[in-house]
Image 1 (cartoon, rainbow, N blue to C red):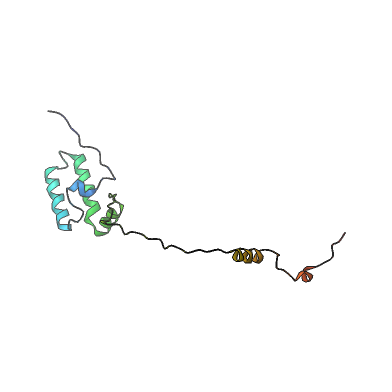
Image 2 (cartoon, rainbow, N blue to C red):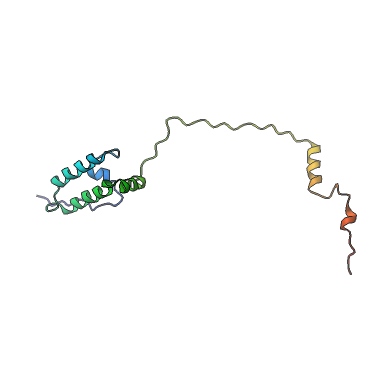
Length: 124
């Protein structure tokens, strides 16, 4: 007879997998699965497996800790059935020479006629 030990408890393992349940299981189903597994794997015979079962039950028995556990579980990303097609509106851009000159004049001194206001003597 071979002496096999269960794998050590994995803190990232889903408690639903440990208890053999689906994520949408009710509180009664969680309790029922826990007691069934405890009868199958009593702490006297399989203490490591019992620790895994007990830890999984502790994470799922309280609604608040169950919600925290559900938010921390990693799930595979499932893409939506059909992605909406994104359309980019086409812009009609027409640039003339007059537009370019108007912009250049606004950002430069080309059309400036108020030079006298800023005139001051240069000191030697």
